[in-house]
Length: 91
Image 1 (cartoon, rainbow, N blue to C red):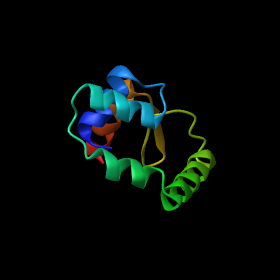
Image 2 (image 1 turned 60 degrees about the vertical axis):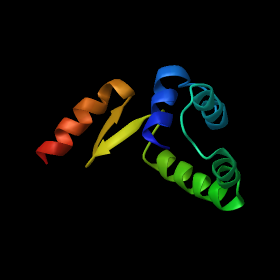
Image 3 (image 1 turned 180 degrees about the horizontal axis):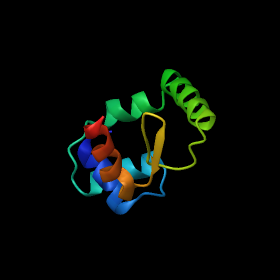
Image 4 (image 1 turned 135 degrees about the horizontal axis):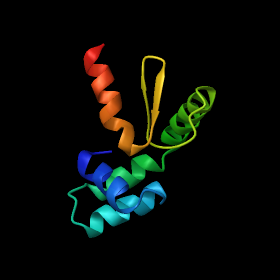
């Protein structure tokens, strides 16, 4: 996702599906090339990558988004991003 799309995700629609967030970003005039993005998002290859990443997240006991790891330390929630970045800068 692009930075403007992430902003829409966190600011407006954190509990919505990805396609809902894309539609919301469009309403807020975020510049995205929609047709190729939606085609890629719905491709079989992308769905397989999602399954693989979901399995990896489950193995790490990730239970929500966003979740950040700095080494073995897990940070959960947008409000913990600054803490994760601070630790990453120190290591």
